[in-house]
Image 1 (tube, helix red, strand yellow):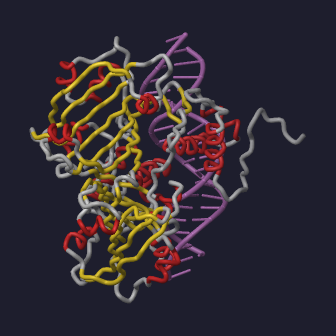
Image 2 (cartoon, chains in turn purple, orange, cyan, red):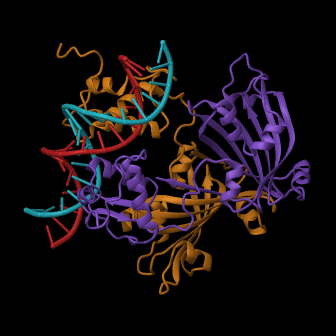
Image 3 (cartoon, chains in turn cyan, red, blue, green):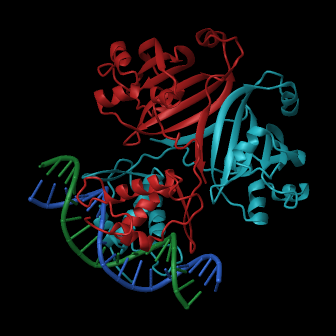
Length: 252
Length: 252
DNA sequence: CAGTGGTCTAGACCACCGG
DNA sequence: CGGTGGTCTAGACCACTGT
């Protein structure tokens, strides 16, 4: 026997992982294992303070995370309660196609149709906020595959000069364009604006996606932003309606 | 002359509005008026502490808000910087159709096709997490109008018993269903899961939306959650692709 | 009223970055 | 190295809820 604290005193004060993160992980586990049941109040903050041997600030930091993730909800003057578990949790982060497919349990793939610099069309210049001098952008057109079957067409435009380009080899080896941009140029995405609409397949699109002309397609246009909130990519994505649905969680 | 502090000391310590909220509002204004220019570093936290006469905790609380809203970005060891302004800011909250249309500068309207209790189909029972005993739900089918022209069809299912129902009159007078639910039942929405896909119009849908059969439609299925994270509504929304686009901002 | 979450203070030390 | 944001403490008082 070392200690005999009532239940939990498992926070390592010397760990590189911050205490509030350790604590939110521990509490999330209790919720996911249903040690704490839905709509049940969790111990008050001042009790968690002594249970985990941290300050109230740290307790609140940990709880804030779980509230924003939807695991807990608070009622002022009443307490903090366990939110009922949802089946599909947290399919809500910006991610690459490669990762998106893995989450869905599908095997991602691609066929590169085009890779090279092109003159930027007007509306793309706008989305990428290009300055006057720049007139060429890198364009990458790919068929996207899920379990080796075509699921969509991606056309991406990147504001990279000719000197800083990407080869087909590099793209094939990385799979995810975002992973390549991070390792090669230290370009890290943090956010994106997306516009979604329904459309129907043109003859060419139908041929590429193995569909009949006029079949429904989901069109997504995404502008991706780097850490400094600068546009780093504009992509036009066309998905087969029968093979791709888009999920999003929105808060008030 | 009353005081002669360098610039800003305009936080009212007696206000009912918390200091961190007052402070984030003041700073947001500086960014929107471009008093602080994009990518420029803002004063360090310890300086803001004395400038606004608050503690560092409060400074950080204010900055956290602006970071999450996308007005600022931080670089560890470097500083906190102004994010470039985006034209289309914050169209990202869960809201009613009525409010959605207003934001888009259109005049919302509706034609009620059906309002009454029905036996709940299986997949809707699931989405609403109905218990065994409940077998009827309130169903509301409406044509949605923008500037008096049909833009979509909404079919909503609400887990309300027959005794707690809604009349056509009430719905017409409130316009927004959510506003009515809040005022009548104290049901407040906080979150929703949405699934989007492309489809084509059936004969009936085409007739209702004044389209040709086979025209592209954006199909959105939404499950709305109350404060306690209980499902309070399931809606199937079908929008004319030529009149409705969906915008979303996602973070990593 | 007692108990809960919400706000706030004045400090401290750590981790990271650039010169 | 000095300056920045990141984490953390031990308090305090306020606002809201139920009994």
